[in-house]
Image (tube, rainbow, N blue to C red; front, side):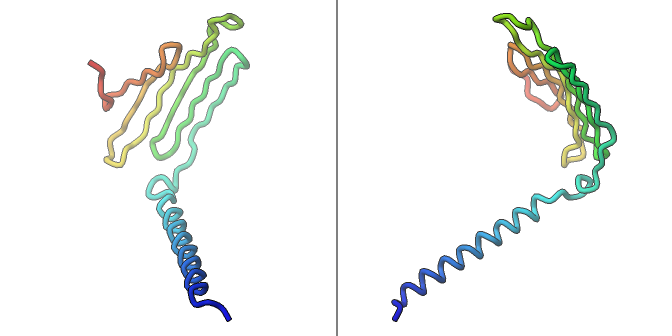
Length: 121
């Protein structure tokens, strides 16, 4: 005959599995695209891979998201070889405002600029 505490532990494990499954289901539902996002389509998608020397890409979607970037290899084959990247991205925030960030990423690090970003003093 089984000890009643064995059934209690088994029941707690099953309840825990159900609770975890429900949390996972809620997370999936909340993560689903909503509003403009779920119906967004790609309007433009350009990619130019220049081999080891650099690249260019740009894309735009129907919900106001766009990005473009160019990268170039500097000082190829030397001790100072590095990649320089320039680009920008734009999106519409939940407040309806359009946000745009332009950036440079090179040997000096990532340097973003945007009207909504704080400026270092």
